[in-house]
Image (cartoon, rainbow, N blue to C red; front, side):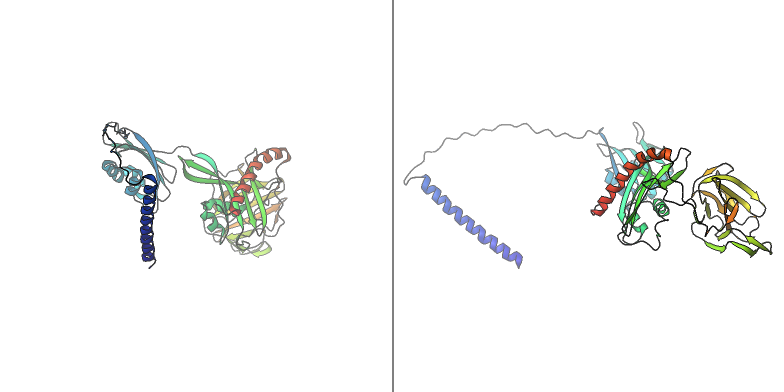
Length: 431
């Protein structure tokens, strides 16, 4: 009905316009010509002129240009090549059949393909970076219709990535939404784990901002490194952390005043586990079947579970001792020692004199020595006296040394500005 009404109205308006035009023409004629006036014919001459045809610049057959396309979900090799503008049946057959480039036949979403194409749509070259960082190259042989392929693993380009988001359900969901790798999200939870219980304390509206290291090959992300700066806002309270590498190679996270955001030691050297035997001065030993003091804590875990250094220190023992089996002992300054026993094996590079940082993997859970099943026996010693690792008062980590404070501030200041800028974008509702 609305369309018909509009059509009728348009018709009436058109008729009215014609009437008005005719009236105006009559008025103009009345004012322009006197009655009984006759007009002399005006002589005319027909002139025909040949005009030059406009020039059209065609792309010559030997013109070449690079195009880039990202693989989408559901794509095939043929659909990506079509978007790249490749019109070359021979090239497509080669790419589908050559055994040395099978990774192109199972493309994953997000992978980039770059093609060098000539003016006729022929494929001259193709470049793509595999998920592991290997660069695949396909090139047309000079003057023939055949191709040669090769692969190489070039050194990645290091960079920094900034991401920020607001939490609506979980930390990992919010991080995934802005493309933060899971390894970086886990670091974020570890850095602020002393302030925020990420299982129970998260609230809708909490926010995070993170600056982390990346490795790219020809523009393709092949890996994420460590967090260099981060902020977490929980229930309106903001916490910040900046990574500082000391001249001796150790790393730590500190706030804007240079104070460590972590304790010197982790409560548990295992990520997820349960205590099967606590610290006790009298316990029936399951292997010796006699009453002995148990001056450590046993954590149950499957064989092969990674064991992490509870604190930064130096390896003073990495070998086999009768009751302990495979054992690692770390010295942390002059006062503290930690012991990790019954290991199945040691991590690569763990030997006497090795420097390790808090959280580094030093070995793997096993059942060596006087053990009846796979578990980790962990001891925490103060002045060589065993203390209960689950209840002992852990010392605060040392702040940035006074002699390094100026260099730390120089590093931290631009990173703090990046955090503030990214957080402002999130608060403004941007991406």
